[in-house]
Image (cartoon, rainbow over all chains, first blue to last red):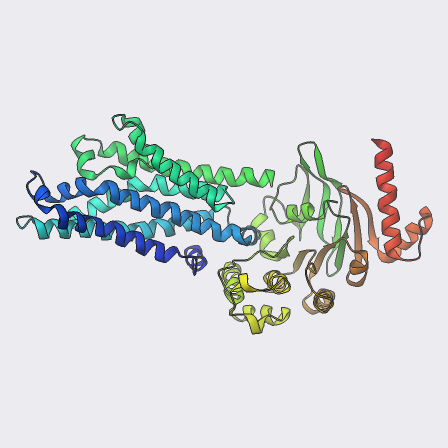
Length: 241
Length: 251
């Protein structure tokens, strides 16, 4: 029920067009890249899917994060603009259930985007590398891995958006976090495990380093920790309201 | 039987005490007018009843249910309107009420009923952000009245309405206990308004309850304490002045 309500609240907010636009832009990127530089990539050694992922994922992940930032800001702007959140607070719903409803909605949107993006990468690999035989499980594994690595970013961004009544503040924080993470040294494993940094990692590179369980475990733990943090934050806010 | 009861309820923000040792007794099936100047602590008290802010100390029960243990059960029984209308501007009036209906698990007809009750049926499809101030106020009231809750907490519900709208809402509030057997707590800083709506009156100043009882009790007390008794407005002003003077002397 909460999910239905949260979906209804997104009507006429621009959330759905934002998801579609980000999905189209991210999916178009590998196609354009291959149209322009196909010879460069087809001459490379390695698995076609991994070659294409390595070549395109930085930009695609950034577009995914832009969607997460914009989506979280839009959702909470709708709550704060006409004080709708206060009405929700005086209705018999458990504290935090609205937040988790928004989280699930944003994750579902992200799921759709990631599936489309990995399908496009697979399609490009099949088209430009005739010897490549794609498997459904490879596409799914890659999409699933990217989704889990993006979950802490979604949770943290939703917390930021829920804490700031002014949408421009949360939008600014999100954009700053994206750029700060890109300029941090990439050779430190600890820094690579931060939200806003993990979505850039691809399954192939993490598998190569043998860090798949580490990334999955830490991202899972970060997601749960930020969720609990939101719950505590809501209790504290009630004391000082 | 008291529908809402508080015991030494306090709310402090740092050094500032917004509500101090409040002991309210709101009887079932009556309209209780909560009166006080701006900043007296009326909204803070109502916010505590709705769980929007936690009390610093003291306790309260609503329909025998204790806060915070029974917060969700309390909210199931209370329809509320606090400070300003709260809604989703991107949704129509009908869609706003539909969200509340789903959360409360009410029948679909309750949305139509609530819209009719506040006279918004004609504008139900219009986006709420395009409503006039009075229409937004009515939408807020519809959100409180939907499903005919047994307890209504209304914070200055006639703010922003024109004289005709004020009269309509006042008549509606006055009729609610008889029509739906509900208890109403309504706040205002205008005694003339409370006088026309309420069965019982509570006067709050600087977070302290100065008086609780019927309008008649207030007149008797005013006479006993030597305040002017010509009309309730003067009694109220004299009471507040006297309290402010005592506080000034105390400090």
